[in-house]
Image 1 (tube, rainbow, N blue to C red):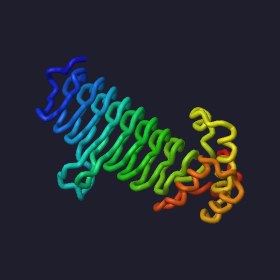
Image 2 (image 1 turned 180 degrees about the vertical axis):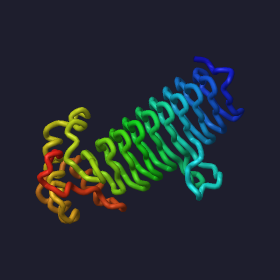
Image 3 (image 1 turned 30 degrees about the vertical axis):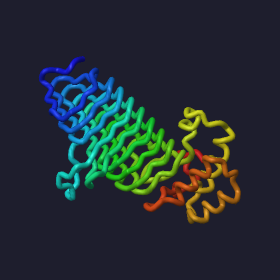
Length: 267
């Protein structure tokens, strides 16, 4: 697909020679778009946007437009998209709100139709954000997280690596790595399917499962639970990462289900 004659591309836009631009696309500058990227009909690319190589920008997607923030007054801020991302129909990704700040998408991510990334949020690599999910301002999503349909992520929280959020879940607390999340930031056990698909061995999964059971299987003081895990569980790199994530939290961490005998959990 060549550059369609109906596309409007600012003079300050840098396009790699093979970038494909569909009908009705608008690209404001300054911005830069790398080789192999396709921009489908009626998408909009905002100013101060960098898009890497081999990305798909879907029909009607909006990448790099102004943040939805009363404090924003038009300062120079950025949107940075890595390589090999699928950004599907009507996805919205807003640029940073403070001068010099950025919203960032890593590599090999899949943002499904109508999902939203607010200003200054970030995705790592191999993240899936399913239809209708909302990622709030300054949210940090780590590698291989899976944000299911219509999930809500409150601003400033962190989502750990290999988290699985079930459809319609919501969170205003940090979501610990390797866990299944449901309801309102409630840990429902270890993300066994995600771990196995990611190639984790039994020797890696076993200590993690024990740690998650101690931390979230029953509701107790999380600081005491962390101390218990450190004393009783083999401190593998994965367990150490889980504990450090919890210790670093400023927003508070998700908790386990109220009913420890809930059948819909995997501890």
